[in-house]
Image 1: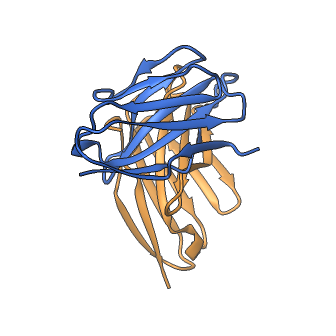
Image 2: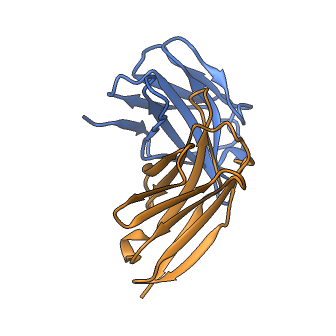
Image 3: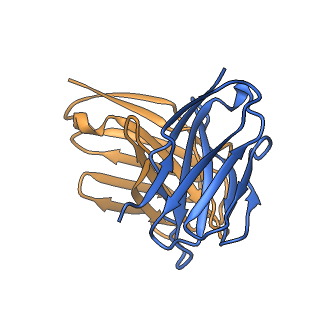
Length: 110
Length: 114
């Protein structure tokens, strides 16, 4: 995952917003993804954004994409205890492979 | 529809022993992948397959071999396990149509090599 970088930890109070940031290097990426991994489980696709979009909103989730700076962020509104997980940013190219970041562990405290 | 399944869920090996991890998917996906997950390093691609009978090296292939004899199965082999291969191994698959490469992951295999 050296092409995709993200901070490793985030602690947030229940009810607040969480913002997870990611930078990527491949400007030819078609889609950028956010995957969620709950304890003891595999990864599940949380949301994604097409590379020609700036923003995508899906209920409590907002994805922002800044192509110029190669920066991707995921905002979770009204963070709940069930949002505690590891969140992975990933980029895809045209070869059916994904490149993942190291993952951000989000801890929600009461 | 079970999705992606992996066996075994846990395994402890001694250095030098061999084992095979099995991945199966029932979604008729063409592409399958093996990753390892280590703390602070995210997921790293070991090997992948773009169809039955084909395999290719990923980012960290050394010490591993794979086979895709049937479309629904992707096997990962360790011929002579080393402590550096202690990790959690994930299998994933994706369809070959479209450009949205949503990968479906199995629950993982936790391997410890002593």
